[in-house]
Image 1 (cartoon, rainbow, N blue to C red):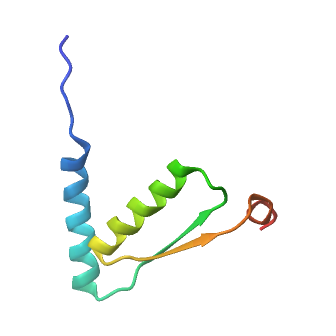
Image 2 (cartoon, rainbow, N blue to C red; image 1 turned 45 degrees about the vertical axis):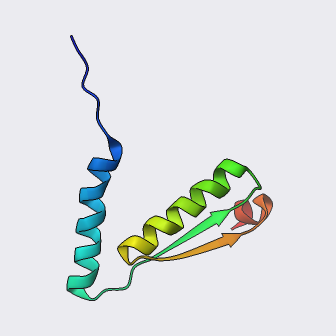
Amino acid sequence: MKGKTIVGSTIAKEFIEELAKTITEYKIEVKLVAFLANKDPSAEKYAEVTAKACAETGVKYELRKINREELEDT
């Protein structure tokens, strides 16, 4: 059985376009609040990429940098 390569960016593009269209069409405000509780470079990069994707779709993005204990107590 031969596998098929799936390109994630192609699939994601459809969802991103639909999200942007819905936000514009219904004139709604969508906001994503993310928490960064460490200084892991991978986590920081993920937050950066997420911010970019939000900007491209019209989603407001807020990154809150807090310590891990503060997040666990919330």
